Image 1 (cartoon, rainbow over the protein chains, first blue to last red):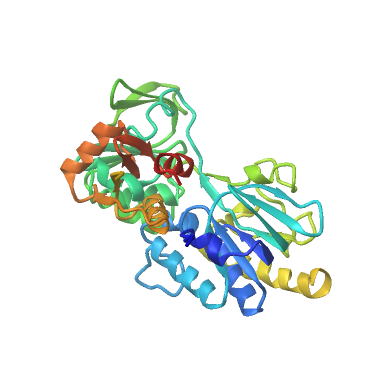
Image 2 (cartoon, rainbow over the protein chains, first blue to last red):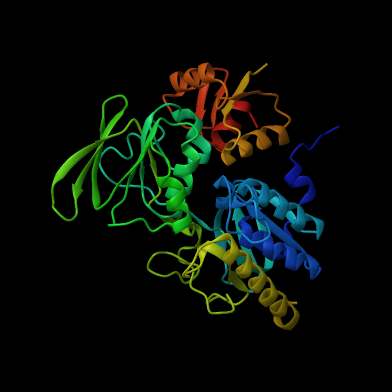
Length: 319
Length: 77
């Protein structure tokens, strides 16, 4: 008897009416709407349900959860809801696509999926810092995920590079482990929501420093300091740190789309207001799109619109 | 039998992905939560030279992060 233990292969076919690339809030919302329209839908997620939101300890600005909700918990609730309405979900990497013909092809590690329509919801990932020392110390004292690695920095004096919502939210989370935090921001002020700033500066072991251009990250076996140049006075100085968390923005997950679809100069997917891309039958939703505000709340809205337009497309043309 | 150890923290999504993947392949593994066990956290840093999770130890071979190709190779999947 041959046992096929690969759950993915057992339950997932190679032909769908709709394939959603990315199982974050945008992709899973689209899956809920398409499932309810009784469209045969597959979601392909690389990491875990919730995508990048799943790496957020607590979401406090997503409506319906007055006490906040864990990002991973929200992701798994959305996954459950999408499955309830019939969507299939697999965990795999999309390595290439072929959008040349009416039937779209999505290439995974070991197989291909064919679909009438595609919704791109592959989101974004943290932007890496490119200064001397940043690459060498990545994973060895530099982390881009406080939720993941925070507990490994117990009792250390750490620095956080960045001053937006992610930087400050994660700083507040890290305070439960670390001895002290210095926020190293390039601008003259934080860009995070005021409520987060208020909560952060209440802590005595938190310091803030502004107008810093990062020059290098220094140390031998372990990180010792960050060299900065003051953007106003041009003075150079070293900030001591035993560990560093970096939150300097995001870059879209669109490498697999290059040459297949229109991207903007930052590689975000260009869409019209109905979230249609330049390719018929291919839509985009969430953080991967060229847009003003990237939040769970806006991703969810995108997912609903993309699914609605995709449903119309299948009824009129693709069906 | 191959001995598989997974060092992870409870809140790390890629750690969840590693554990789900091993479970889906019916691979037995020892799960070590380094967020609550400081000694094991030091052991992980010593073995991998890394201060990040997940780290897998497959019969002494160290894999940092969810590297499916490498996991498949070491486990013969």
